[in-house]
Length: 209
Image (cartoon, rainbow, N blue to C red; front, top):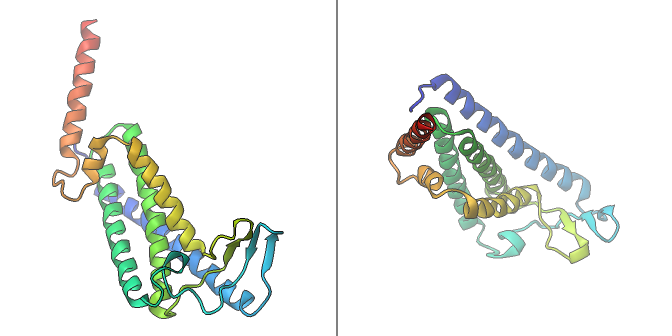
């Protein structure tokens, strides 16, 4: 069954944008505060010998953990491309949720994937902004306990969302992944019809009993 809900779809897109924008702004604010409050100063200790805010002087001119150092232009373009792909997938999922009549559990799974993609996109875009306008990425969060490379809020968005998405993909139905796949031109209609057929069969069996 296909739903016709243009108004709710637009509202859904708006909610996605607001979450994306809020995460992006929060990342940029923390970076500004870190640069103004921590640059050329001693680290601000949160938990002694465990966690501290330690501004990386000169910034990170590479990717995570300093890899591809000196390729800031390439990394900026790559970050923007990745963000665009993530936004496209977010829009597609939102469209499927609002247009196709799906079971509640499937909608919940799609919403979870959508939210994680929003976090991922916000993180990628946050670091892309740094690379384009600052020519380096501001890093300031340091896990001293394990001597983990200094990172930032955007990195948290990307890493955590990537790990959770990888876990979800292992357990999510293949049919759901097929719906999200851009190569699928049915926009979930085939899955909805298949779902309706299954429900009809269950209903018939119940009536026979």
